[in-house]
Amino acid sequence: MDAKAIFLSDLFSGRQRTFAIPAYRRGYVWREPECARLFADVEAIAGGGAGHFLGSIVLASSGEKNAVTEEFTVVDGQQRLTSLLLLLKAVHDLASNDDVKKAIWYYNLINEHAGDDRHRFKLRPEESGASSAWADVIEGRKPGNPSSGLWENYELFRRKVEGGPHTPEEIFEAVGRLKIVRLMLKHDDGGLQAVFETLNSAGLSLTLGDNVRDFLLLSCSSQVMRSLLHGECWLKIEDRLKTPQAVAEFIRDYLTMKTGRAFDMPEAYETFKGLFRVSRGDRDGALEDSLQELCRLSEYYSLFLQSGSGDEKLDRVLGQFRLLD
Image (tube, rainbow, N blue to C red):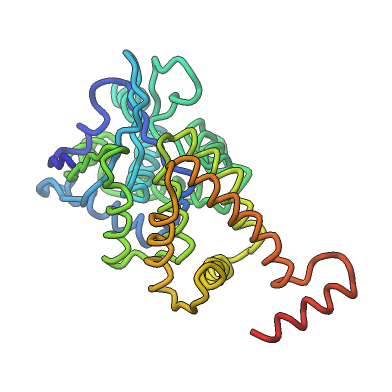
C-alpha cells in the first residue's frame, strides 16, 4: 500500500485517468446534508482559509493501462469523489471564464483522448443504471432515473454557487486546494478485502450479504470475472430475495445447512470465510462454483420466503413451512 498526501487537483493530473466504481459497491447515497457540509468546506477555502483536509480516497490499480489511459478502482471515497465532480460540473456550467470551463471539462470530467466510451468520463460507475445516469448529468441531461440523487445534488451545488458570495472561478480554485490522502493498493496484494473489513469495523454499516459479496468478488483474479459473476449470480440472488435482511438470513441458513450448526450474524461471516478457504482450491473456479451454488439455492429459498411458485396448493404448503421458523 502506498499512501501520499496530495491536493485534489493532483488526483486528476497526468495521463487520461478513469476512476471506476465497482457495480457490487453500494450506490451513491449522499444527499443535501452531506453535500452542504462539503460545500461549506470549499467556501471556507474560497474565503481565504487554509487548504482543508478532506479525508482519504482509497484506490486500486485495475491493471488497465496503455499509452493514453489509466484506470483505477475506487475502493473507498466514492461518495465524496462523486459529489466533488458534481460540484465541478455545476461550476463549469456557471463559469464565464472559458479557460476555467475548459480546465474543468478536459481535466476533471472527461478524458479527451480516451478513444473509447468506456474511458470517456473521469468517473465511471460500473452498474449500468448508475453509469447512464452519470453520463446524463455530465452531458447536461436530467437522468430518467431520479432515485440516484445525482441530478438533485448537481442542482443543489448549482444553487449554492449561484447564491454564494464567491464566483464560480473562485470555487474552482478552492476545490483544487482541498487536500486528501491517496492510498493506492494493487488488486493482487491481498489488501482489498482487508480494507473493506477495516472500514466496516470502523463503523460503516455493512450487512452479512455485503461482506460475503465483497469477499467472493474481491477474490476474483480479474475485473472481467468479477463483473461476470456479479451480473450472472449475485444480482440474481438480490433480485430474488428482495431485501438485505433476507440475503443475510439466506447466507446464515446456507451455513447451517453446510455445517449443521446455528450462527448469529457476526459469527456467520467468519464461518463463511473459513468454509471457503478450507474447502476450495482453484480460485476463480471455486468462486464460480460457490456463487452458482448460492444462486441456485436462492431460487428455492425465495419460494419459501414468498410462497411464489404460482401453484396455489404448493404455495399454501410453503407458507406453512415458513411458519415453523
